[in-house]
Image 1 (cartoon, one colour):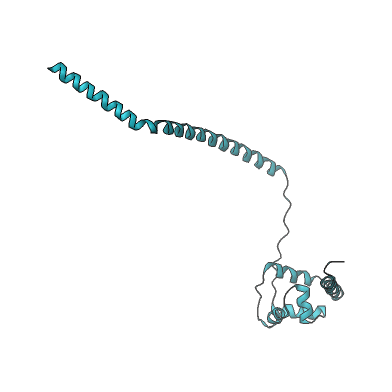
Image 2 (tube, rainbow, N blue to C red; image 1 turned 120 degrees about the vertical axis):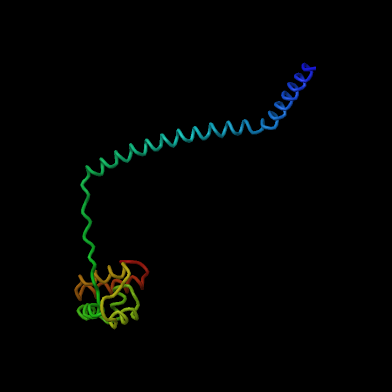
Length: 157
């Protein structure tokens, strides 16, 4: 009797292993492929990181060897409303003409001149005002005539 029980037990174990194997079999290949893919990606990332470190070191050596040109000191160019008015008067321009020269509206120039203290301006407007400081009255009027001709013809001369 013990042989029959043992045989029965062995047969049940064999059948249950076969059933379990059939249930797990569809997941075996994708899991194995995913592990291979992950291992390959890890190797590739490690190689890329190594290459990146090597290139950064080479770049650091090259940039250290090349003398960097010094950037010109950025002129803060504090501009006040009173300064705008005096600049406009120095150039001998009306508010409208000065506005065209700087690239703003005449109302903007009016507001700047009335505002006490330092003006907070956008970078391109500040640059235009600082460039206007370097002009003389004749140059400013010449630029205005150049701007008018560009506006009339649609292209620069």
